[in-house]
Image (cartoon, rainbow, N blue to C red; front, side, top):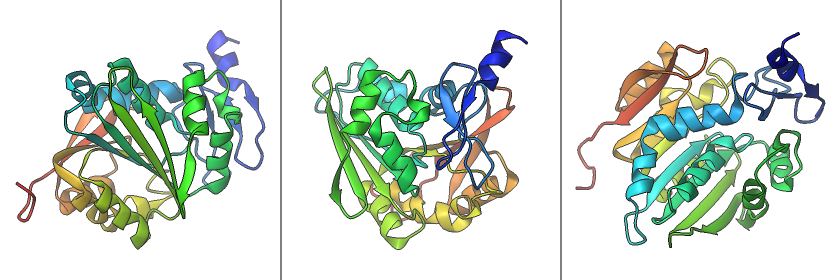
Length: 263
C-alpha cells in the first residue's frame, strides 16, 4: 500500500460528530453523520480552503494593500464547519502584515460541532497551529447565538471574527448578514445542493445579495446548474475556474450593481 493510501485511510472515530480521517495534505476532516458527505476534499482540507477561497478570490491583494486606516475588508463565511475557511483567511491576513481591518461573519447551525471546535481538542484539530487553536478558544458569547473574538495584527490592523450559531435561513440570520455588510467576499461552503438545498437556492442568494457590495466576489466548490441559475437570477455574474484538486471546476461569481445601490 502506498504512503498516500496509508495516509488517506488513517481514521479514528468521533461518533457524535462523524468519522475523522486525514486528507492528502496531512490535515484532518470529518464525515457528516447524517449527510454521508465529507466536509472537505480528500486531496487536502487545508489546501482546499487556501486555494479555493483565499488564493482564487483575490482577497490577498486587498490584504497586501491594506493600511491601518484603509477601508474594512468583510468576509461572509457561509458554513463555518470545521473552521478551515475562516482560519485560512485569518492566517493569510496575518501573513500579509495585518495592517488593515478585517471582519469575518461565519454562519453555523451545528452546536456540537462548534463547541468541539472551540475546545481546541477536536479530532480534526490534530497538528493545528497554536495560533489557530488560540483563535477559536477566544470566541466568546456576546449575545444570543452570536460569538465573537478580536485579534490584533502585527501591522496595526484589527480583526473582528463573529460566529452566528443558528439557522442561517432565519430572518434573524439574514438580517444580521445585511446589517453586517457590505461584504466584499462570500465563502459559500454548506453541504451539497443535494443534501442541503435550502442553502443553495434563489431564496438564499436573494436574501444575502443586499448584504454584498456591487462587484463583491462569491467563491464556491459547486458548479451545479441549479446553483448557477439561482445566482444569476439573484443578480450575479458567474464563471467557472480551474481547480487545484481532482475536481475539474470551481465557481466564482460577482454581484452585479443594481438600482438603489449606494454610490
